[in-house]
Image: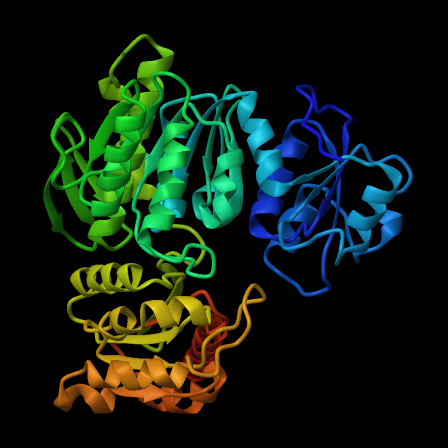
Length: 493
């Protein structure tokens, strides 16, 4: 039984199936903030979202049909679950309790507000988070939802400064973003990904074009002029919808949001935008992150213009936004700094597509030119690895030392015995110049590499775990061990 969210959520009783998922947990924050009474269920495993749910007063129980009995008004579920596999959804269906998927619920919420959606194969999490900190700096009455924990949001995935506006990260997988109802969209990038659903570039591009084309009359598309896929999708959407407004941003973009003079200065990325006189500074490495910042600034400018009859951002707003940008320290698993121990800087990054790997490593190399870059990567899904095998193999050129592992499995596809982590390692080895090949290593399980890396890492290194797998545990184990050894050494001195 399908439903919509009521305009007034005060006292409305909602149960969340899969509450520990990042997106569903973030939605829980917004629902609680709007006055709903929220409960949840999930597996017993512990995630960082457990702390968030406890802090906002959402109790989480094991899956049980009893959870949807006795007065629940609505069940919202992660799309990882269905009535065929989950007892709560089966019970809701049997007794007539309305249900909504997470994308449908977020879409229903977006329809009641002046909403902006951020989408793209790369960069949507960082762009959304940056838009949130700058919306706060500009004093906009906005709620923001990001697909990761953000330090500037107090370690949460959402921040609420009001309920007039909504800025949300929206996902292309299985066309989930089509449930969202934005007035404007930021499009960061389009290229092949999610090969288990989109067989080729044309298929995934069509989904983005469909999303842009669903904007209301006069809707705005803030698009990255440096990304060929984003330009391609915008060009097709503009033909179908000539009333849409295009707002380009990037190093090659014309107009106010064209970027100029990017440089690295004392571990800050510094750039200017053509339409504004001040410099913008970022502490998060990479030209690609500066691009995300430009897209976020363009979105805030578009929101202000739409709300205030075409008004441009004022000088005090711009200065506050620039200060917020420089203070931004990133989000969880996006060039996240774990800490420095024994002279080694430890980081973790979610980059799991060849383009993201290349841009992230290039950014780290530019920010930290004196450090040896040690990279531990775990690929995610056989379908992505198989389709982009050669691109993956050639994406690690900036790594001084590279460690690879088995492919992290996905519940959404069957294993492929022909596509393995060792195959990726062999291709990466073949793509590496002969003298550098000994610096490429393979360990089936991430923790198998612990002894080697414990001996190999030396002061001055930058060690980064990358990918959507569980190799972050290796980085955490190495950091904790070195930090403990450092503490013992200081205690003895």
